[in-house]
Image 1 (cartoon, helix red, strand yellow):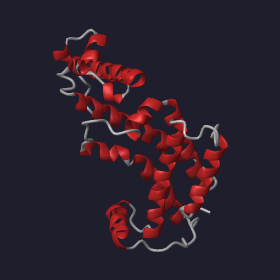
Image 2 (tube, rainbow, N blue to C red):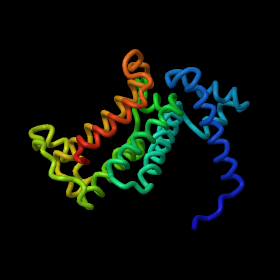
Image 3 (tube, rainbow, N blue to C red):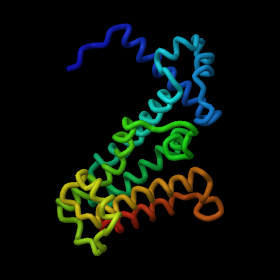
Image 4 (cartoon, helix red, strand yellow):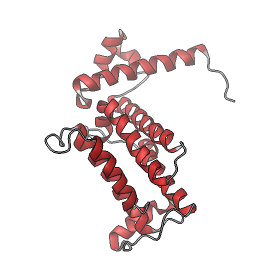
Length: 229
């Protein structure tokens, strides 16, 4: 068990949460490009020098918001995957639905992590692990399905050349998973967020809007694509 926090630590944690909440309100009204520590300090009634003791720069605050968003999204996907399903395909579809539900409920945070790059901001290495929580959940479904005999041999060519090298970089995350299946997982992962971006940024208006049935059918098709038949 961890030691109980002191009153000062609790106060610092509470004020950190208030700062991030104010920053999220700014994301909603002005977007990430306009995020301003000075504006946040005015909203909270703080002198800017005090706020800089919590977040020394705009980029550090952005990083904290990005990590929080990735973690919240990852927790939603993980919670869906932990439930009992009669078939791994249903787990896959449920994770897709949980990711979509989170994105629709938090469109501005979704835009922060999957929208346009923020001018002058370079995400640090600390954002990588939170960012891969969703694909790791999908990978877990595939790995469990293989272990339980749900996945037949995937009829797909081996990646070659530079593509094979790129797949090999991520192969340690999935010991024993064939490279063609791992490549298809990456394709499914990027397809999921591409489809979400189309929905949230209005690209499906006039075609697949509302997108409920389209999204469900696509999630089933992508489960089949990675080998979960």
